[in-house]
Image (cartoon, rainbow, N blue to C red; front, top):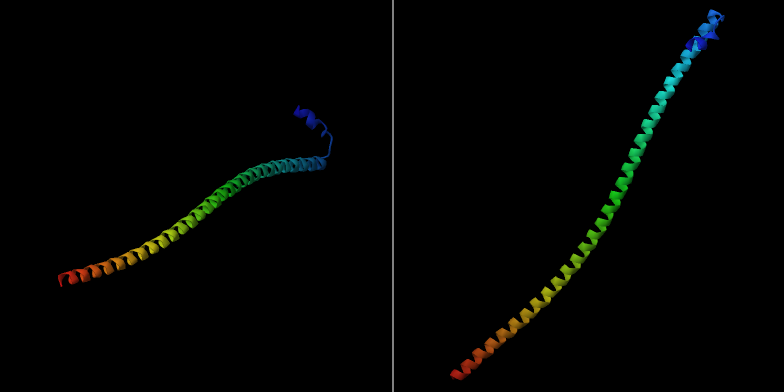
Length: 120
């Protein structure tokens, strides 16, 4: 079948045949370049899709981390409030202990005084 493709060239001058050969070579070269560019395009599109997926995954991970961070901040706030309440309760109890200790000392002095009076 290649002889039929070449048949139309019969009788053409060598200069025209040379020009046809140059054009055919150029067409082949352009076809190869087009195939290379198509391959590059497909490769770049695949890389782009991969990067888009990576970005999407990172966005999802970022959202998860933000929620976790918010949860931890709320937990810290609750723990700080609990710490403040416990600290306040401790101060109240220390104050009560000091009052009772003072009362105990006062009662001891009263007992000692009464014991001294009994001895007299």
